[in-house]
Length: 148
Image (cartoon, rainbow, N blue to C red; front, side):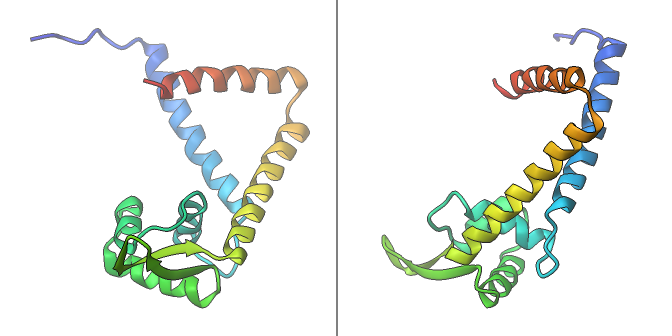
């Protein structure tokens, strides 16, 4: 049996701190563009649809980790708000594809811009130039960790 080497204390500490900070930062970024008329789950579906021409409710449910019935309810709410539409699948007329409307694309773009503006503003206001450079360098390390 192959034993893995003992983890260094610095690796354990770095792991804990990265996970904690990413979790907190994610919540703060999402809150920066929080829409009052849609839920976090609905916003997540809009973001998922933003780079796809259309997907089924089953595919969305699987990607979001929810039941098909829950996704159907979410899609119905987004349809009522005019943010998504259902259309026939050109390859299989029995299926319906869900896609963003023009208003849905606009809302996704606005949310992304608001989140970016918030984070850039926080980095500008609360960090020195040297600290911002350190963040950029740290991100290069984290990017390396995400590539296999």
